Image 1 (cartoon, rainbow, N blue to C red):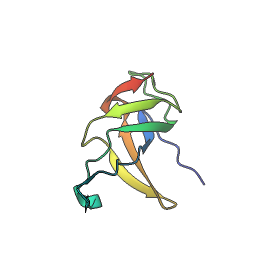
Image 2 (cartoon, rainbow, N blue to C red):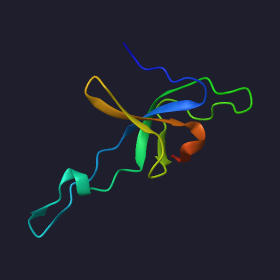
Image 3 (tube, one colour):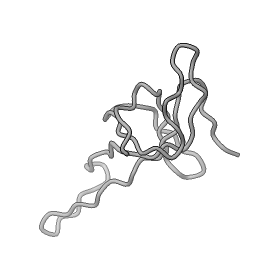
Amino acid sequence: MSIRPLADRVLIEPTAAEEVTMGGIIIPDSAKEKPLKGKVLAVGNGTKDEPMQLKAGDTVLYGKYAGTEIEFEGIKYLMMRQNDVLAVIE
């Protein structure tokens, strides 16, 4: 089974949050900054007004509160609209 986004939506695998320790203090997961970068795993077909510009394999930057977090087979992903993506890293 796999996930196939519809219309102008993209499926993104966020990069892992960086482990930061300060003087031996371990920062809990709840206090870590959410990553704002990820890899596009799948894209929809676009809409008649806006063709799909992203493709699977692109590394992208997105807004802090963009997308909907989903969990599939134990892995967390983000599903968002193409216009929520801020930039493609080349």
